[in-house]
Figure 1: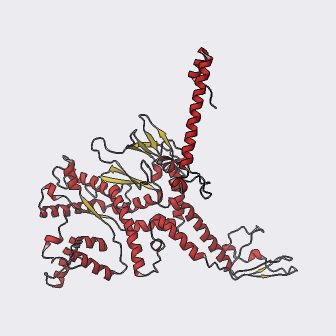
Figure 2: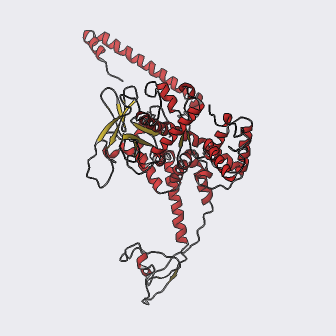
Figure 3: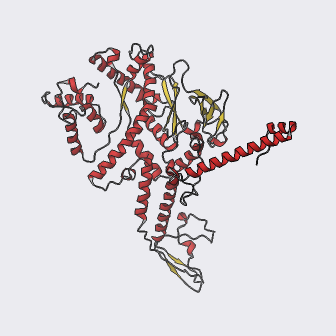
Amino acid sequence: MSKPNLRERALFLLSPQKGNRAYENRMRKERLEETGRGLIRERLAYTGYGNHGASRTLNSLIGWLVGGGSAEDDIDLHGALLRRRARDLYAGGGLARSGPATMTTNVVGWGIHPKPKINSDVLGLSDEARDEWERNTLREFHLWASNVMCDATRQQDFFGMQQLAFRSMLVSGDVFALFGMKPNKRTPYQTTLRILEADRVCTPDAMGGESESKEVSGGGRIVDGVEIDREGAVVRYHIANRHPLMANSTQSVEWQAIEAFGRETGYPNILHVMTHERPEQRRGIPFCAAQIEQIKQLDRYINSELAANVVSSMLTAFLESDEDDGAAGMEDAVNEEERVTDPEDQLKLELAPGVIYDLPPGKRVKEINPIRSNSAFESFVTALETVIGASMGIPVEVLIKKYNSNYTAARGAMLDFWREVRVYRRDFNQMFNQPVYEQWLSEAVAIGRIEAPGFFDDPAIRQAWCSCMWMGVSAGHVDPIKEVKAAEMRIKNNITTQEQEAAEFNGNDWAENIRQRKKEMSALGAPQEEKQGGPGDGPEEGDDSEGSKSK
C-alpha cells in the first residue's frame, strides 16, 4: 500500500477528515485499476497468440524469459564479443570459414567490374557518343582501379579491396572504407581508399575495445563508435588510430571524429558496409552470429571424434611382467624428438602407433579396446550442417562442397543460393562499389580526364553521368548444354537479350565478345556475315540495333 502523497498530507493538515477521504478515494481507484488490468491480462492470456507463442502458462514456454530491447541493446552493444568469437571460429576453419569464403567467392569472385550505362536521353547524347564516352570512362577507371596506388596502404588494387571489404564484413559484421587523397607518379589520380577493420570504429575511451554507447551534447548518442544526432541520422564516425587490442604497441589509443559526409559537397567521407536486420541498428553482426554456439559445439564434437579415432588407430601391445628385467619403460616408446611432454614427467605417457610397451613391475592394463565405430557420426554432422547452412542462407551442398544429388536437386540448390548471392551483391554494389566509382569519377571530371558537362551543376545530370552496371562472376553451370539451350529460347522469345545472357552465363561483356569474335574470324579468314554473339539465335551481328543497345 502506498503512502499519502503531498496533496493528501496538505489536506490532512487543514482537515484530517478531508485528507483521509482523499487518500481512501485514491486507494480505491488504484485497486479498481489494478483489478481491471489483471482482468485484461487474464483475458488476453487465453486469446490469440496468448494460447501459443505468447503463452505464459504452457509448460514448454513458462521458463522462456525474454527481455525485449532496442536494436542498440540487442545487437550493437554485443558487437565486440561477437566479432572476437566469429574471428576465432573463422581462424579454426570449418563451417565458420566455409560460409564467408563461399559467399565471398560467389559475390565478389575475381572482382565486380563496372560497365558505365549513362542516360543518353537526359544528357542529350547520340548512341555513338554514348558508346565512346562509356568506353573511354571504363578505360580511365581501370587505369586507377587496376593499380595498387588506389589503395592508401599500397597493397591491393580496387578489386582486391572488394574481396577484403566483403570478407571482412561477413567475418566481423561490418567494415569501413575511408576516402583520401594521396599523389603518386604512376597514375594521374589521387583518390585513395583505406579499408578499416570494424574494431577501429569504437566509442572513445571504451574499455578494451568493448562495445559501448554514451550520450553527447545536442541530444545525440555515440553507439559503438557511430555518432547519431537526436533524429537518429549518422553524422560522424569515431576512429581509433590503431586497433584497441593491438599487442606490442607503446602508442596510446586516440580517436578522430570523421564527418560522415562532406560539409560542402555532401559526398560520403567514409563508407560503412554492413547488413541491416533491424531499424535503428548502427553496427553489423558477423555472418555466423546466429549459429556461433552450434558451430563451436560441432567443432568440439568433430575434434573429439577425431582424437578418439586417432587413439583407437594405435594398435599398441603391452607386455606384463612381475619382475624388473631392465627393459625400456613406457617413456622410451616415443622418439625423443617426437615427444610433446617433459621426459622427466613420470605421470604422462605418450602413445604411438605400432609400439610394444613394457609395463613396470606390478602394473596391469585393465582394458584395451582399440575398436571405435560411430555409425551416427555422418548423419548427425550432416543434419547440423544443414541447419547451420540454412541460417547462413547457403544450401548444405554448397556449404560443404558436396554435390552428390541428381541434376534437379543440384540445380535447385544453386538457384536458391544465387538468389541470396544477388541480394548480397546488390547491397555491396550500393554500399561500396557505386560510391567508390562516383568518388573516382568526380576527380576524373574535375581534373579534365573525362568530359561530363553539368556534372557539378545539377544533381540529376550528375546521376545520369554516374549511372553504371556492376558485373561479377556468374553462377556456374550444372549442365551447360541444357542451360545454353534455355538461353537460346529466352533470347528467341525476347525474354532476355544477348547482352544479359552473356553477363549471366560467364560474366563477360557482350560487346567485347563481339569485337573479339570479329578479330578472331578475320584472322581465320572466315566470312564476317555469320552469326556471332551471345548464346542463342539473336539478331545478326551486322545489325547492331538490337544487340548493342541497353535501354
